[in-house]
Length: 84
Image (cartoon, rainbow, N blue to C red; front, top):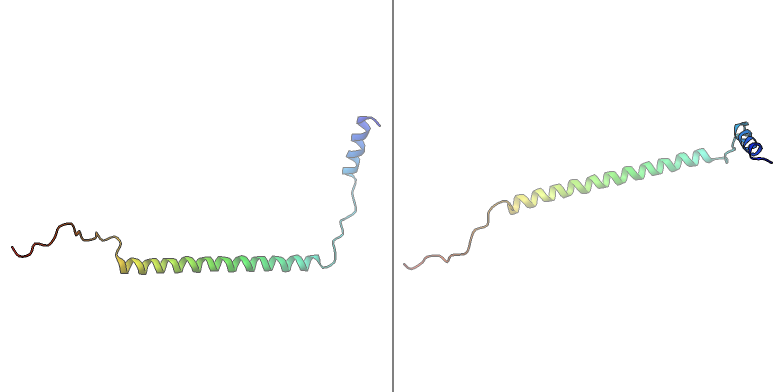
């Protein structure tokens, strides 16, 4: 078989209509159920992440309110002048 004939055979095989692919029974409900589970899991993970982030923000705000990290600490370099 020459190269031209091989190409023609391959091309005819690609262009001729083939039989439709048969799917196993119950594939669509299983795929739908899996998609629903994945979506539910992602939604739960997203909700948990937002909960953790909100909790961290509240904890940081409470800590900053109690400690005042932006205030300059008092300097204790010189001793107090007593008894002069």
